[in-house]
Amino acid sequence: MKLQINSLSKTYSNGVHALKDVSLTLNNGMFGLLGPNGAGKSSLMRTIATLQEADAGSIYLDDLNVLKHKTEVRQLLGYLPQEFGVYPKISAERMLDHIAQLKGVGNSAERKELVAALLDNVNLGKDKKKNLGTYSGGMKQRFGIAQALIGNPKLIIVDEPTAGLDPAERNRFYNLLSQLGENTIVILSTHIVEDVSTLCSNFAIICQGEVLYAGEPDIAVNEMEGRIFSKAIDKAELSFYQDDFSVISTQLKTGKLHIRIISEMDPGKGFAPAVPNLEDVYFSNIATRVDVNSI
Ligand code: ADP
Image (cartoon, rainbow, N blue to C red; front, side):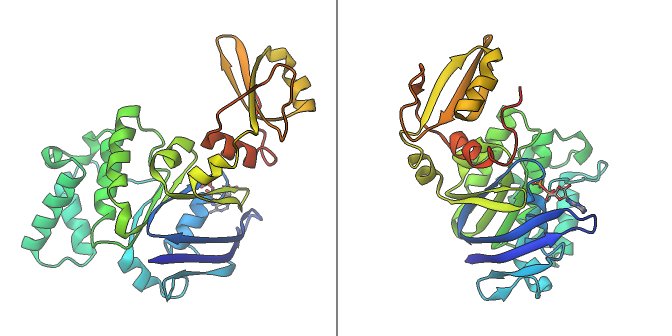
């Protein structure tokens, strides 16, 4: 499967230009859409999920015109939205059975088998009789994945799935997502760089509605080799360094401010070469657009 997004644009009625000429190509596997809050990630996800219109541009899933043939797309789609509400007084098992029915799994024996398999798959088998209102954040997200998987979707969209999960829940969720990718396109929207470095074979950085970078995480990090330098400074000195260097990130550790800069040559002044990582790629791309160094 291939998802081709061509020159997609969207301006909301309040004048916010949420998507500006977005073009991306996605193949099977896990694709990370990385960007700060307000970047346009959800707008893009909702458009691909056929839930809102674009002003211009096209989206094709292989030969299928996504913006035109919504019903066909929905049959191939699994979607876990950012705000995933659950009915608190219904058990996971009953709710999933109901969703499966809505998605057209008519035969009740078949449904029962499907629901049990899905809940086992997301490790909720032993909690399937519990009401959804009693689930933790991580359990709700795993339930969300189970419902998105009904009907063997070819395109799965998960919007900011790890926000609000504790580290153990996030790990469990990573393990679950990483099993999905091989024969489907999974789009994971996130503002958490670690989500992308852990899970995604391809990714794009989006900011203020524009794609700033698209490629493979490893290649993106290699491109930074020899260009990242770090130094611990006093907090009060930051503005001096910002005037003279391209500061891409700052981190306060035990009273000292650790800054990372991008430079094509050795900057001297006590900076040490640093091993680049995906955060450097992310921050160096968005640094010109948003203030990443306010402390
Ligand atoms: P992200 O998912 O990356 O946080 P969004 O797509 O939600 O970004 O938002 C992109 C921009 O569009 C933001 O400025 C947001 O306030 C605005 N926006 C999102 N949805 C709407 C809407 N329905 N009406 C008007 N503005 C919106």
